[in-house]
Image 1 (tube, rainbow over the protein chains, first blue to last red):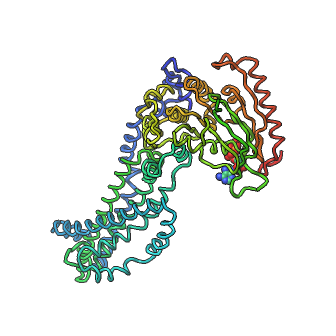
Image 2: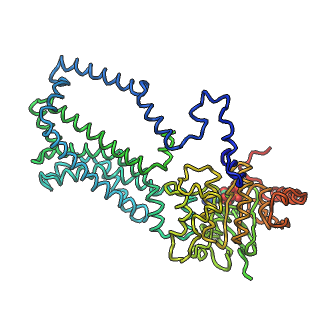
Image 3: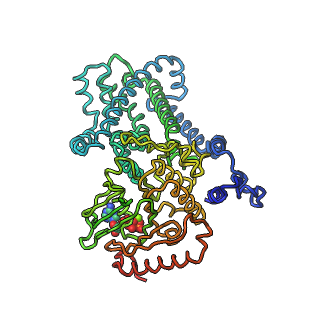
Length: 304
Length: 266
Ligand SMILES: Nc1ncnc2c1ncn2[C@@H]1O[C@H](COP(=O)(O)OP(=O)(O)OP(=O)(O)O)[C@@H](O)[C@H]1O
Ligand SMILES: [Mg+2]
């Protein structure tokens, strides 16, 4: 605010009042903050530096090492509970294309499922938030659908749609549908009232309010939903593959078959692939969030 | 000649409020076009409610509102109302310039051109911030963006609800003079809600003092300070007389209204 008055009351002279004392005696302790440094560069550089600091990476590394040691100890004593880590790595390295192919099969089911489920949910959220009647008609059933364990429907879906991709996509779509619906519906209603008032006094149409105000305002909620739903979609795809182990392969099928022949190394290699895919999807959402939500409070407080 | 703003027998009770305590009761106002009017009064006397009704955001229970002879709905259909609230109410995902251009982008059917955004930003001294985003600006700068956005339409009436109340005294004073300058060139009718007696006197041609529970017009005071108002005019002795008169009026308005239930007695 001090900077602000400097500008306003000195409209005639552009020089600022507070740039005058760069040699502040208190400077050494807060050296980074005294000069008005170029804004975008500072926080990013600070963050990159902080990742390299031991107190940032050391705790997680210690836990990782402890877990690995514990795992190896168990694996040595009881090879039918956990396979040795080296064996899992060797299995992965021996036939990477096998894992890549199966991973891709599962991932494509998950992604198509998300596209269908989240896409439908988004459109429905818009309709529901615009029309009270639809809201009352639809929401009770959406809630029922949410509390129903979808795994229970999966066998029936296989009967209905066969062993192809369809039942798996349907399971994944159902799993991802509800979180997106609820989040987006909330986001569309979370418009600050003063802004809405400005649109109203301009007599903006419903469509204009939706497009220019409601949907952009709901973006943080939509992306938060995606962060939940993308890993969930992998789970949906794997569960569907457990139930409908068709010819299309996939990590779920592979894990089930390997488990039944007691090939624990294959099971855990598959699990590693699934975990890697989950991390990848989360990273993707984080990337999109950084691009799209630069204006949102959550991002700014994170950077400060 | 049609008045800038005409209000007749306006009553408003919010749903759920006590029947004997309407937010506004029997409001009659006539504000000549191109006048600058301030609303001042104890908290809860219905200033914001009145402003919302003038803006067509809320309907009165009884009574009539005319903005240059038109109903508020009709006026907003023609994009003839500018609104500035206590918070800047900008779109955070749009740059300053895009925010100022917004009124031109919606409701194109009104067929109303807005002033060039660059010109508007220059008028409020923010041409250097045109491509920044709201989160990169200070509170005072944001409020100036909101003022520029509202003025771009050359509205018939400009409604402002405590626009500067969250700012420090110096910023506030600077923005007051800037607003006066803009208003003088554009000549619209302004209704300005404030809690500051000084702000009301410095800005207005006329001050409407309201009393609370029920919200009524207590007294209308004319401010006969010369225009344009610069710091010299405002420093004169007459200024203090006026401020005292408004303070006295506020005091009697406070006594006239029922005491708020929620205030702890001193
Ligand atoms: N949406 C609402 N629903 C119910 N009552 C309301 C609503 N808005 C305002 N009121 C009531 O109407 C009265 C007037 O409120 P209003 O906000 O207009 O006061 P105000 O003069 O703007 O006060 P302040 O100076 O504190 O901003 C208050 O008693 C308030 O409790
Ligand atoms: Mg108010």
